[in-house]
Length: 254
Image (cartoon, rainbow, N blue to C red; front, side, top):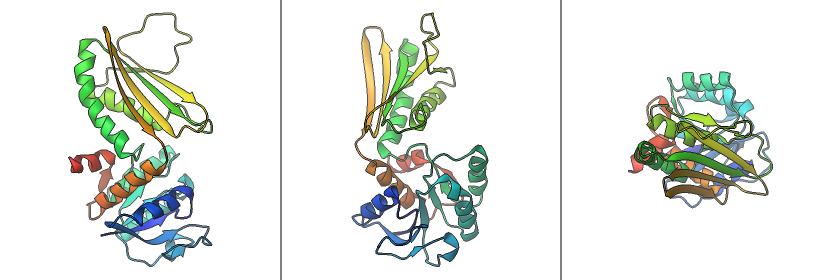
């Protein structure tokens, strides 16, 4: 049984993870951290980390970037592994994550979905077959109309997985409107669609001579990210200091 502290327990994702853990016999939330403490939970909730005196095996973080520095310092001090799900970290904070990982187990991924991370593993193998055979590669991602960044971090992570597998031969192309030329074989096109309430959709297209192969992942709710974070927490329990990601979680399941 993994005992977890939910950092940001009363936020939307925090409450979703709390609900998912209630139906998982291998993990339990033993404490929560949130500036809003009026929400009723079946575990004690503290207004800050310094006040938390509950023993646990791991922290799951779904708060915000402004809380990351304090969280990392506390986890290093307590030698508490942490699944870091906050987005929008600055380059300075990302360097701090790397420094913290030298002293305690830290797991951070661009996308916490088990499906997306399994897709990355599949794509690394697929591109080695299709690229040498002359197939062009395109990524199309779709998200809701409130999303601020484009392309998505997940789209870039998929592109990086493909590019790493091909020893960095691809050039990312985000907009062809100013190009009056044929597509270069080394291009990897990345397109973004924003509209409605789309949670997240990512499609990788291998377009070759007379045939097209498509790999697609669709998230119908944010619960997929919560489920991934829970699996990451169970994986991280007892791990030595290091920088882990969801690919490590996937590898252990193979």
